[in-house]
Length: 503
Ligand SMILES: *[C@@H]1O[C@H](CO)[C@@H](O)[C@H](O)[C@H]1NC(C)=O
Ligand SMILES: *[C@@H]1O[C@H](CO)[C@@H](O)[C@H](O)[C@H]1NC(C)=O
Ligand SMILES: *[C@@H]1O[C@H](CO)[C@@H](O)[C@H](O)[C@H]1NC(C)=O
Ligand SMILES: *[C@@H]1O[C@H](CO)[C@@H](O)[C@H](O)[C@H]1NC(C)=O
Ligand SMILES: [Zn+2]
Image 1: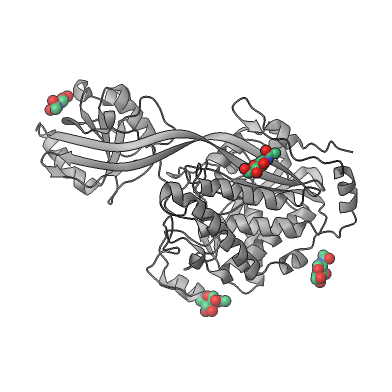
Image 2: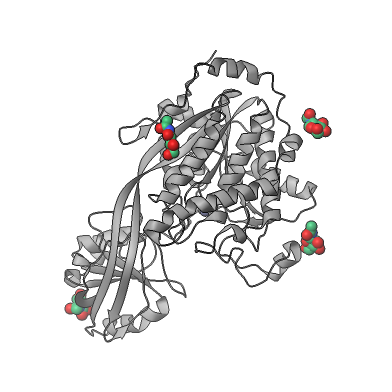
């Protein structure tokens, strides 16, 4: 018989993290035996346990937990580092702990970088220009304005040679493209610039993130191409443009935790994995994003304990998704090749109940994603079709926690109901709702509360999640075998890693 301590936990111990061993109790070997007497999970039956009133009850509890964040943030939130997030982790963990004979439950703690912006201003010549400070930007020195001439950087400002001598002591004006915003900010800092202004290379405003902090980063803001063009012309004509940038912000590191639960039963070398993110943005309680996906998985994890499985089922609740997929990136980075190969596929469930929903399926393809991604996509499509429901494809472009998995050879996919995209008339014909409005008008805002969730869509998608888990918990027959921990598929250039632009 196999060790009851899953290799998963062993493989994730690293110097910078503290991983708690899963709960072990004296009865766990009996539990494994008795799980054999449970009937084998059956998709129809598992779906039959899913009711929107139970989901609603959990959503209301989660909102109360988000209110724990009010003392520090002035409103409910479950952002990492907040009491609301700590409460979320306790809720998930304590619920799962009631089934510690069925699941090995572990915490994976890691350090996340957290930014907070209090204010910013950009003045070019004599005019104030609308600018978005980049997420994770450092403040200007002493959080006071810097005054310096604007200097135009050559090309995209990715190489030291793009910076003229007089970039030292200047405010650098840099075009978007080729390299990340973080790389531009670093290059500007190394060239001695006091601050950086990145202008868009497409119409429209520009906001993004600098990503991982660097000691060379300088305060960095984004502006639109339209706003930048007149100043670029003046600079090219040799004019001097006295300017100022002010950013008041902090960047700090905080420990936070992924929670993982894996069935003790089932083939431990062949796992179906499903995840949602436990955190919200700081602006609101995040009940749809991603309270819904997290609670769908919790509800299914509870009902799955009535059954046995042939394969192992592993659930994850990621932390730090909103700061750039930190939890899932960290998790995958800590997998040995052997552990990586045990994950037959990863399914991402983020935003299951948008009020102006569409049934969206990530358009994962075997031609450009790890083989098996397309079979998973087709499982979702077949289910919607069999249930007489419409669906649409959405880009599989790195905006949620599947990203690290598909970059490390693990087939992935998932479903969603839409964020800040705009619903078309055609989609209104397919799903109802309002054309010309966001799928989730409360996306990343304070109003992402219990009322923001469409219970009908949530119940349907939770049944589909139950179907996806039950299907692969029974068999991987016909599902492609894992071949590599690297992806040989074409990697698409996506400017997204998580919810924000990084380049
Ligand atoms: C699953 O359960 C349903 C309903 O109880 C039943 O009709 C179906 O035959 C079962 N499927 C399998 C594969 O046992
Ligand atoms: C894991 O984290 C949860 C939530 O923070 C906590 O309640 C629990 O005590 C932790 N478990 C272990 C074994 O550290
Ligand atoms: C910086 O140097 C460039 C030439 O490399 C020149 O065109 C520009 O006017 C200078 N800017 C300032 C503020 O001195
Ligand atoms: C699916 O979409 C078509 C329009 O393309 C619509 O006529 C039909 O009613 C929709 N089905 C459902 C279940 O909403
Ligand atoms: Zn999300």
